[in-house]
Image (cartoon, rainbow, N blue to C red):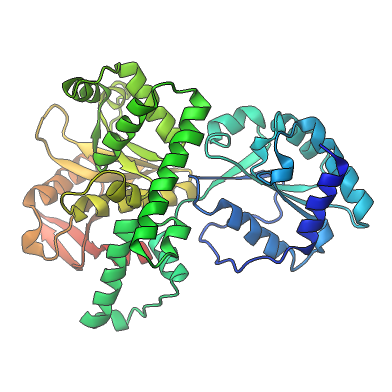
Length: 438
C-alpha cells in the first residue's frame, strides 16, 4: 500500500459531498467510550447510517477531525493491518487538525483488522465507529476479536414507519378514520409485505427492478456470507436448502424432517450438514429463529424452532409464487419488528408457546418475556372481523394466559380494532398498521 493512495482517499473524503440521508429509527451514542459496531444483513443501509453519523458530527467538528474510510474502495484491496499504520501518517502530512472520530466502513476486509483496532482503541485518542459484513461483526465473533471493547447495534431493513418516511408518505391518525385514507395506507402496507424493506428496493418504482434487486441480494448473501466464509463445496444443495427454509417461513423447522424432505426428492444430505446450513444462514442475518417457551432446557433444545426471514421480499420472490398467504407474511413482519424491539432492550426474550405433548395442541405465535415475567402474548391473524377469527387461536391465548400468568393478550389483525372478552379474558385486537406505527 502506497502512502499516496491513502492521501488520495483522504482528499476524496475531504471534498466529498454527502448525499441526502434519511434518518433511521436506530439511535446510537455519538460520544461513545467503546468501539461502536453496526451489524446487519447486507444492503440494509449500514454505509448510509455511518454517513448519517458523519453528517451529524460535522455540525460540531471540522471535516479534518472526522476520518471516514470505505474499505471497499478499489485502492484499498488486499490491505493488512501493517498498511493501516500509514493512515495517520498520511493524514498528518495533509492536514493540520488531529483526528477525533474514526468512521471505518467494511473494516474487516483488512487482514488482521482486529489487532490494529484494539491497539488504536487502547490509545484512547479516538471515538470509533465501524461496520462490516454480516458474518465478521456477529456479536459472538466480536466478543472474541475485540475482547469487551465494543458495543454492538443491529440495523434491520426498513420498518414500516421508515418505509413510509422513505416514500415521503404521511398519514394523519385522525384522517385514518376515513375509509378512503385507511385504504391508501393498507395499500402501502401490502406493498411493504410483498417487496420488503431493503432501502434500495423501497425506492424503486418499477416492480421488475425490485424483484431483480431482491434476487441479487439473495445471491450475494449466499456467495459472500455463506459459501466463501464456510468454504461450501455443494452450492446447489445449499441454495436448495435456503429456498426450502424460506418457503416455510412462519412455520416450524426441524433438522430431522428437513433431512427426510431432501431424501424424498432424491437429495442426499445429512442432518448435521442441514443444521450447519441453518446456522450459517442465521449468522448471515437471513433467518430469525424463535424457540419454544419452556423452563426445561431439554424441551427447548429438542423442539423445532419457528423460522422467520429477515425480509419478506425473499419469501415472495426467491421461490415461485402460487398463492397469496397474507397471514404468514403478517406474522413474519411482526416477528422482525419484535426482534427489532428486542435489540433495543436486552432484557426482552422472544418465544412461541405450544401445548406440550399434543400434536395438534393449542399454539400462541409470540411470547414476550422481560426479565423473569411474561409480559405479553400475541396472536397474528389476517381476519378482518371478529367472526373470521378462529376460536382455536383465542382459546390458545386464554390457555397460555392461565399457565404463564400473563394478562396482556393481543391479537394483531389486518384492519380490525376492538377489545373483546373471551372465556373471561380481555383481549385487545389491534390492526397491523397501527401496531407497526405505534
